Image 1 (tube, one colour):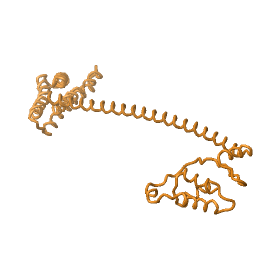
Image 2 (cartoon, one colour):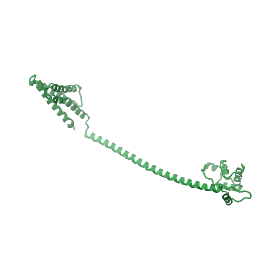
Image 3 (tube, one colour):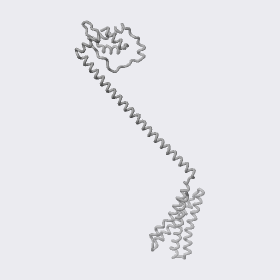
Image 4 (cartoon, helix red, strand yellow):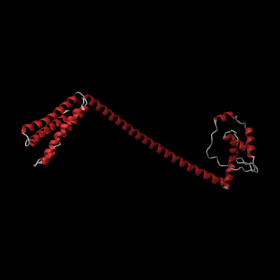
Length: 286
């Protein structure tokens, strides 16, 4: 794995050293003997190579020295400066020499990248553990997403079923209310008719000379159930007591109250009696 970063750094270092040596020999060879120019070039490359080797040794030991690093970068900038100066003074191919003047700096940068690679490198065991942890996290996230989607689909199905059931109940209630309203209207029409009312009165109650009881509509509406405690605490009324109470309530106003009004006041007064007994008492006193 180190070859991915060390090979480019070595190649760039070799190319920059060769270029530096060649430029120093060609540039200074016209002013000084070529052996002197060769020594100068080798000195620049040697100093750079020595500091680089020492930096690599410190990196292998897990250490770092800023002074050595500064010296190494100084040799790199010196080599780059020599190439730039040669490119600026060259009469031919100045652009080409200037284009390769950055190679020493690039070589130092590649060695810096290689050092960072080494400091952050992990063993295959650690990499396998990291991959396992990442895969486990991805698996858990996928399972959580699937669970959420399933729960959302289930909730949607439940809400749809509840809504449809509620709609069916509402339709049945509307239909029942319409039927009851029609029946009530029919009863009210029959009650309001003079001949029909007399006929129904004659067959629903015994005829008393001089008295024609009024036929009442059945009670239709919400009822409030009595608490069990009140039913248990109140003793059952006898027929005679029930007749007295019903007669008192019925004749409390003039004209006499109807059965519905009497029943409402009977319940409001706190008395307790079944509908059958209350109607029987009403028939007896009326």
